[in-house]
Length: 257
Image (tube, rainbow, N blue to C red; front, top):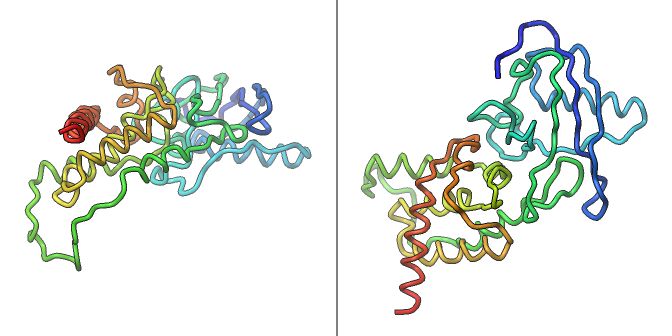
């Protein structure tokens, strides 16, 4: 999408409003006039909420924290795109200069039964916590901080592990997968340990436990569409899923031998 000019923008927002998990939701339309193109999308919602509060109406609920693309709290679909039309950024890093004056924007929460809506744009991501908890801990006794280079790790594996650890657990991978699979999230969290020496003792059992926790949470299966990779704000590689699959198979085979 072409960037807008420096002139202020007039935008039409259709925002999903849902009072609670048990109530039916629907879209409500808001006209936002004279918005600065340098404003972030969350600042646009702040402006809208200020107006709603002045009018005595309920503000829009949405998750946010650091507003620097680090915490993974923010996240919703904008015209069907996770975090908006730009790649490699979160919703808080998306600026209105990505749109044109007069654009109509549909804003809705992640759509997955495993990430149920709590209110408006806020979803319950606790299933991610259960997957991480299933991974457990490492049994290797690391002791105090080791001397530099005392534990050899190749540069390639160190960089791959750091890339996997960049996952912020925002849920964009689930929201954009036609199966609502959490394989990219699960694979990233498993890979950041599987690639390092400290993670080797429980490597295969960890993969089995995390995949089983993912399945128990109701996430769908991966069918190699790669939408998750294309919409991940941290651009986590799809190759981590292949690694998780190999470790899962190895873990299952060890369990029966």
